[in-house]
Structures are given as structure tokens and as C-alpha cells.
Length: 203
Ligand code: GTP
Ligand code: MG
Image (cartoon, rainbow, N blue to C red; front, side, top):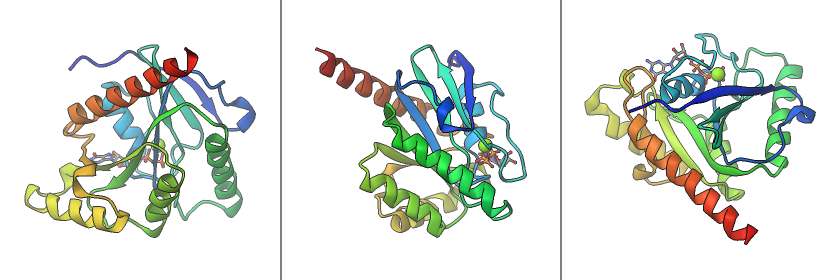
């Protein structure tokens, strides 16, 4: 698959710096260290997003412009215990500001770890997204770390806890590229859907 054209357009750490709402946005949300930035790099086929073994690597909201058509948005991860209360509050507020800004959200990819039971914060996030009717889907990453024979069991467990059906979960691995094709298809569809709905309103 040919990698898309991608540039890091902007990194934002205060609400006043958010770029104006324009192109459709595909947003990655998930626990710190779950593999959001790695997924972006695997998806784009290039190392644009900073990743780390230490949670809390992504501290700002990063906007990647893809094919001059849409934005991939990397949010700082939640649930990282080792940061100060003050910093956690600041990140939380930034994310709240982002969602309050009525962005052009084509899809939210809620990233979880296929190896683990979703945490209470993961569930909170899933419910929050559902209550606001955001077009969200769950991506379970680090699939390469789960033996094939155990993957379906993990998929069912995650689905049960998050209150969705197992088919709604995409299995992904940033290491092997598994799931990239499926994810690309879905993202393209969501961006297309969003753009055609927009043009409907403009008529
Ligand atoms: P924050 O920026 O802290 O929110 O973390 P993040 O969600 O962006 O995680 P990041 O992509 O930095 O990855 C965290 C760690 O998990 C790194 O050591 C990655 O190499 C590793 N990792 C991420 N995705 C995968 C994967 O699919 N498979 C394996 N084996 N390791 C992964
Ligand atoms: Mg990151």
C-alpha cells in the first residue's frame, strides 16, 4: 500500500492555538502508552510521531495533515499515574477544550491494548464518546503480543466490557502492520462520508 502524504502541521498545547475548524479530523484517543503514536507511524509508513516506552510521551495535541484532505489528530493519553495532579489537569482541560470546540470530527479511534482488560478509564471514555454520539470505533493494538489462539477471546472480553459487539473492534499491530488495510478502508470511508455530509449542508 502506498503511504499517504503526511506532514505535522501543528502541535498545540493551549486552546488558543487550536487550528481553525476546516478539514475532517480523525482523532486518536486512548490510555497513555497504549500505542497511539506508534499506530500513527505505522499507518503513515513513516516515523513522524514521537513514541516512547515511558508513558506520557505525547503532551500536546498533534495535527497531521494527510493528503491535503484530512487531519489525523494525536491526543495526549489519559490515565498515566506518574504525572503531577497539575499536569494531568492541564492535559484534561486541553482535551476538553478540543472536544468543546465543535471540531469537524469524522471519526474517533478509541485505542485499547488487546492484551489487557479495558480499565475503568477506558470504559469511561467509551461511554463518554457514545453519549455524545461521536462516530467512534475501537482499535485494539499490540495484537502481535497476543498469540493468535487467544486473540478472539481477548476481542470478546474487550467488547463485553466496553458494551459493543466484537465485530466492532479492529485488531491492529504497529509492529507487523496487521489491521492497517482494514483501518485505512474505514478511515477513508469516514472521511468521505463526513465530506459528503458537509457538502450537503453547503448546498
Ligand atoms: P502517550 O504518548 O504516552 O500517550 O503514548 P502512546 O499511546 O502514543 O504510545 P506509544 O506509541 O508511544 O507506544 C508506547 C510503547 O508501546 C512503545 O514502547 C511502543 O514501541 C510500544 N508499542 C506501540 N504499539 C505497539 C504494537 O503494536 N506492538 C508492540 N509490540 N509494541 C507496541
Ligand atoms: Mg504518543
